[in-house]
Each structure stands twice: as structure tokens, then as C-alpha cells.
Image (cartoon, rainbow over all chains, first blue to last red; front, side, top):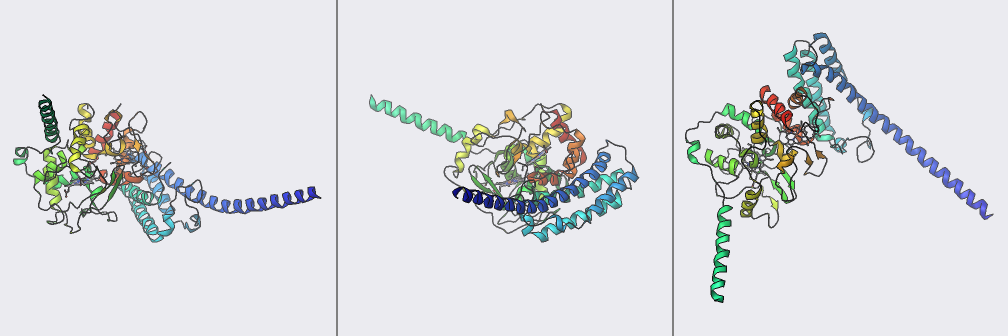
Length: 159
Length: 292
């Protein structure tokens, strides 16, 4: 009899733990997916900026069509609706694998203003990048400044 | 006999005291050096950007501006207490509107106030001491053109014994040097000037000893961040393998070779550097590449 109770308790406990783990992994999955998605958009920015930066640094010959293409992509990326990629509870204090500070969720108006500054700078770059190397070089600065302003305010330093 | 020894002992103590007092007395510039200099405000703006004065002397919530309001107010935590940057706008009462160029030169080159007191090295005069007198005259002319602010300077929050400014004389005696930190090839000289005399890169990127003195033997090899968060990276070629073009791009747009962007305090440094002529950013890159 004692044995049966023990087995029963163990089973109940195990299933409870299992359910808990399941619920947690469900939440984890949604948050992890959102984090992966927003980091993927950052990678797309970086890839396209890399094409432009190579030209701006003089490592690759300037090519007006390629420059316009990359600048177009960047401008398009700034237009993505990212609401679902930033769920509450996906900050660096709550989960691993992100450096997003919780201040983002308490300063949404400022975050949006910084986002608008980036789309403005990207729109200027979209218009300028195909005109010539000096125009492209000049436009890079404002885009970098806009990225940096948000990172400075809302991203934790690397450990 | 006993009386005589005692007298000698007292004499000795007095003499050492007097010597220490003289050695730790605040120093001043030679007025004649500045007598013939006329300030050029336009060039002063470049000195201002290269030296990053706005990063410390604007209010914490100030918007970026081409005519910054130097009302002070930013705080700097350290092992010795919290320092607050004062108002250095041209306001006559609360700022430095009543100062002469000599007052500014004494502050920047010797860390000495118009009243003859020592400044704390949270104000990086340990760097500015190497600045050219003409650059200080130009900077002075530029500062005069900025908007005044009537915000009073806030006191520091520093405990005993660090609140005794006179004791800073001893600190200066030990850790304050006005000579160049690295030997430079002629090509790296402009870069050395920008880094060692104006940019105060070393104030963040060089480790310090227990008393807050810079460890010149480990120049620019990285340091813990005084804010407690993260680490300030080593920027010598031994560790940082970026090309000169990578460095120039970083100083211009803030983009790293991976197209991440400069974060932390460096974002503000980049904001200042991006306003310099491109030749100056190239000079800084060449200097960094010339380091061991």
C-alpha cells in the first residue's frame, strides 16, 4: 500500500513538473521566436549596411545600382511592423539571449521617436546612395547615429 | 641636550611640511605665453569637438545641438565618490563668463582654479595639459559664443579625505605628467596630439591604479567600466584587429566592421569625432595602428 502511494505521488509530481515545464517552454518559445525575429532584422540591416560600408570605406568599387539596392532594402526594413517582435517580458532581466533593456517598455514614446529618426535617415540614404560615393558616405553617418542613439539608450553592454 | 634634539625634530617636521606644501601648491601657466594669441572661434569649435567637452558639460537630458548649453549636471561615479560636471556656459554668475583665457588655461593645463584650488582629475586636465596654447585660445573664443545658462553648479558627493582639495596636490605630484605618453613617428604626430592632448581616450580605455592614477605602461589596453556595467575594450593593435578604414568608419558613423553600432559612452565620443575633418579621424586611426 505504502508503495502504491509513493508511486502515485511520484507520478502526480512528475506530471505536474511536466506540465509546468511544458507551460514554460510554451512561453519560452513565443519569446524566443520574437527575439530571434528581431535579431534577424538586425542581421538584415547589418548585411545591407555591410555592402554600403564596403564602398564607403573604399574596399569595394562604388556601384550606383548595388548601392541603391542595399539602401532600398534598409529603408524597407525600417517600415516593418515590429510590434509582435517586442513582447513584454522579453528583456535581458527576464530571459537569456537578449540585451534589450526593460526601459524599452517604459519609454515607448521615446523608442518610437528614435525609430522614426532611423526611418528618416534611411529615407535620405535611399535617395542619396545612387548619386555618388560622397553622397553615400555622407548618408552613412546619420544612419549610424540613429542606430547608435537607440543602442546607447536601450541595449545593455556586452558582458 | 634633549631640548636641542626636540628643537631639531620640530624644525625638521616644519621643513618637510613646508616642502610638501610648496610641492603640492597649485601651478599656473606663464601669462606671457598667451599675451600675443588671438582666439579663432571657428577653429575653437573643432578643438571643442575633439576634446569632447559637451559629453560631460551638457545636462544629462540635453538634446544634440550645434550650440550646446553647457549647464553641467552630469554625474561621474568613481571609487572616491560622485563628481558632477559644473556649469561652464558664458553666464556671468553661474558659468565662466567672467573668466579670462588665462583662467581657462590654468584649469585645463594645470587643474588649477582661478581661486588657486586644485580640480579633481574627473575633469581630464591630465590630458588637456598637453594641448597647444593656441588651441586653448581658440576654444576660449568659441565657448564665449555659446548660450549662457543660469543653472547653478551642483556640489560633488565626495567623502573625507578626498573632499580636501589641497590633498590633490599630492595626487598630482604622483600621477600627473605633461609629457607625451608614446613616442610618435612624424606621420602619427597629429593623431597622438588628438588622442593624448584632446580626445582623452585614455581616461576610459586605460586601467587605473588603486589611487585613480592612469597606468601608462598599459596605455589604451582596456579597463573596467567605472559605471560597473561592461568593460571598456582594449584598442591597441595587439587585440583590436580592425583596419584603418574600419576605424575611420567607426569614428564617422559608429559602425563596427560587423555593422553593429558603437554603444555606451563611446556613442557620444563618436558623435563628437564625426564632426571633425576626415583627416583628423584618419590621423587618430593611424596613431592607434602605430601602437605596440
